[in-house]
Every structure is written in structure tokens, then in C-alpha cells.
Amino acid sequence: QKEVEQNSGPLSVPEGAIASLNCTYSDRVSQSFFWYRQYSGKSPELIMSIYSNGDKEDGRFTAQLNKASQYVSLLIRDSQPSDSATYLCAVNAGNNRKLIWGLGTSLAVNP
Amino acid sequence: NAGVTQTPKFRILKIGQSMTLQCAQDMNHNYMYWYRQDPGMGLKLIYYSVGAGITDKGEVPNGYNVSRSTTEDFPLRLELAAPSQTSVYFCASSGGSMFIYGYTFGSGTRLTVV
Image (cartoon, rainbow over all chains, first blue to last red):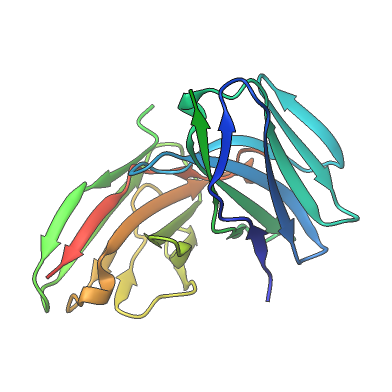
């Protein structure tokens, strides 16, 4: 069974710190990896996608992918209270268009 | 662009009633999905569609039905509502660049069955 695992949290960081969110996946043929942010009562919104080993940066967000170790992480620099949300990791395996979802990590950024 | 539009946003049903959750997208996406999300349980795929006239079951299809007569619309039908169907329902779509842009989600329908 293909699985995506995340720590449920809550992860609590002070404002201005770096928040580090991690995700591991079981299927070695996974190709594309996504981080979504979900505010309470809202729908998931895409923050980052990554499909090559290494780092991908977009503003305060950096996604890191290590296919050999089967993990993907999201770093949020200079965390703001507005970053407080649940972060969902999703993985696509092969050519089918279904994503496998983690349960999410709750992040709280304290002023 | 409207993106993915879901209606209604909220609904209360009595046990045994039926209803249709509407989902429409204006991005010409071939792929559409219905998820339910319960607290602490993550997103569970109910049904998905790879194009007009083609649908398939996801992880939790029991108690639901779908149809896809057009590229734009993907309604979800609940027959004989049960309390176990109390949940938040999300519709999503993806296009040819799915491996880069992932899914686009609608704003959700919060359904309570009493």
C-alpha cells in the first residue's frame, strides 16, 4: 500500500524562525511531490511542487527532495503568524493522476 | 478565472434524504476528483474522472454516485444520506500540467446529516 507519512504536530515556532516540515513516502517510483497549505475551514492551496532531487526555492519557501531516502521537506523561513495552518504533503506515483496524501502537519507560528 | 466552483457551501440533510453536490471548472481540465475530509482523517478520494463519460471509484465510493456528461461539470450524488456522510467535500481538477501544478480545489461543501 502506497503511503505518505507526516508528523501530525502541532509544530510550534516563534515568529521569525525557520519552520521545517517533513514527509516520507513509500513508493519508490513516485515522481512529483507537492506541498499544500490548508487554513482551518478552507480548501487546500498549492505552495510548492518539486520533481527533481535537491532544493527548490520560492520566496520564503524551500522544498527539498531526496529520492534515495524517500523524503521531501518544506522549509519556511522568517515564519509569520499568517503561516499558521495545516501543511499537506502529496505524492504522485507513475503516470496515473491520483495523488497520495499525507494527513498533514499543523503549524503554529507564535507572535 | 473562476477556477473550481462548488455549490452549495453548506447543507444540512436529514437521514434518508438525497442531494447533489455541484462542481464546475472553467480551466478545460480533463481530470476531476471528489474528496471528503473528516477531522484528523485526511483527504479520502471518493470518485474521479479522466474525461467526459469516464468515471471510476476511489477509496470510499459507497453511498455516492457521480456522472461526467461534460468536461466542465462533475456532480456528486448522495443517495439515502447517513450520519457517516457528515463531512467536508472537496472537488478538484487537474490538467495536462498536473505533474507541475497539482490539483486545483474548490472551496468545499460542508455537509451535516442529522
